[in-house]
Image (tube, rainbow, N blue to C red):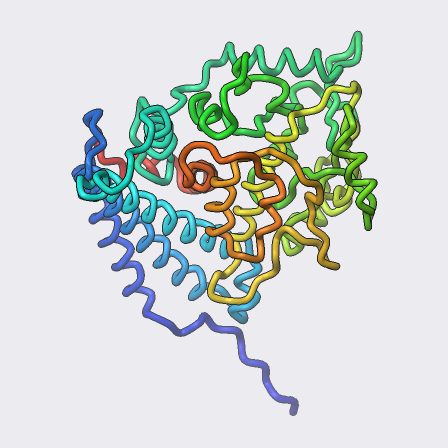
Length: 416
């Protein structure tokens, strides 16, 4: 008789009950910590100490979630790390560690001894940072701060203006053009998506890029009309938009692209292990997400989004993808393709150099080529990292809420 195969069993780590007990205790502690955290309009050292405590507990909860997920997975740990659940947990852990460090740094900056040694931050920059951090769905969940509730009239005008300037509609039909998929779709299947996310607000946009004559948060320069099944993953670190350059561009070709009045872009896949790569984008559209890799965006007019907002979006996707990998192990550089070419590949003055330096420090020295997109120094060094962190945490919070329902946020909200 042949050898009888044994059924796969779950990983024998901590007992089932032990991890669930830890999880309940942490959730109870989180409720208490959030009730102690109060924003009275004065963000003093005591406030930031409490905020750091909340982030520490959130991090502990995610670490337990990671252990439970790994425990329940049948198969080698290396296979578990490739799952979307594992990537999401790695991403959460890294974002929460960064948020904790932010709070501790802000506490230090408000210490009188520190202020005596170093000039305090400008009021507007500090204000914009406080707004962007306190509105994070997976952070402090403080209401009535930041950009506020989205004004539907602003969003409607944003969409209408983009339809006009991108030439997205087809006369006599209720369809809109998606430049990523290069096809018309029912107008309800196409959405107006921001590159620099609405959640950060105009003040933060100005703090990073500098003020413009006309605010650009709701400008077509800061957006694209895209299919809803593309928008669903637009900020997930799965793909990004980069300059459309030849496979091995010579310097003259790079310079030519930079000098073009109408620049062309393409989509590249960042996560080669994404479990949806070979899924069809839509039941009405035959191609898969993998088919989009290297595909040029097809616009109907000569108008293009601003390169600096595309570069910002690219940097956030690079950070998101990097955080989805186990930081304790050697991982692939997210900004290079299989043969070592930098995905963006063109120099520019898109983001302040000091902010990009802090961003690269967060990612690691192997990401120094991102500095090719730097301009002169401006504002708070940490602002770009903090904006990206908020965006990552907010997206993860929305995903958790979809899975667990309203009770995920509300049961842990300090206002309850």
